[in-house]
Length: 136
Ligand code: ATP
Image 1 (cartoon, rainbow, N blue to C red):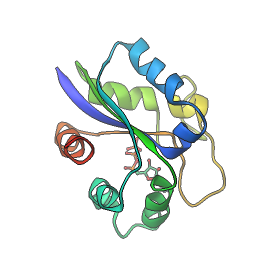
Image 2 (tube, rainbow, N blue to C red; image 1 turned 180 degrees about the vertical axis):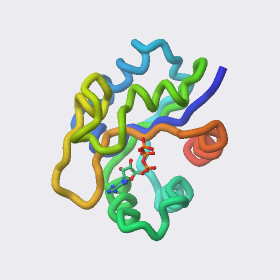
Image 3 (tube, protein in one colour; image 1 turned 90 degrees about the vertical axis):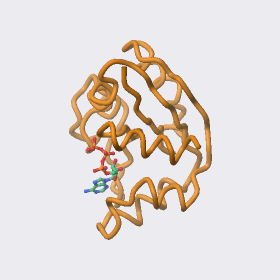
């Protein structure tokens, strides 16, 4: 089977949606192998979002991710990388499909960063790299 790194972002934690998001993951049948609530560091975020450095939303994104605790999880299961991204929905929460985490629970707040509740790794390589950043 496969592993992926999921973050419940500060908006999800602050809004009290941790349980609802974990419920959807468990209901889909994935295993939560590791789980912790942490305040991210600038160093972790620089590593996690290295591919976005220089983009206009980079600094707002980092500031948002530092604004409160996140919940980090390692999920396990067959095709869990693709499966969690399907559960999460597309990046923009305003138009993410109903039935998804972002589509059901997210919206636009008129800010420079899309507060879209969750992150999920997008490939096996990213998953292993990101697991190393958040669980070392
Ligand atoms: P997905 O890959 O499912 O679209 P993601 O979380 O992997 O979602 P990325 O493209 O890696 O999305 O972007 C990282 C994060 O940066 C997004 O989740 C979102 O919070 C924010 N973001 C991305 N694009 C924009 C944008 N154009 N404007 C504002 N914020 C953005």
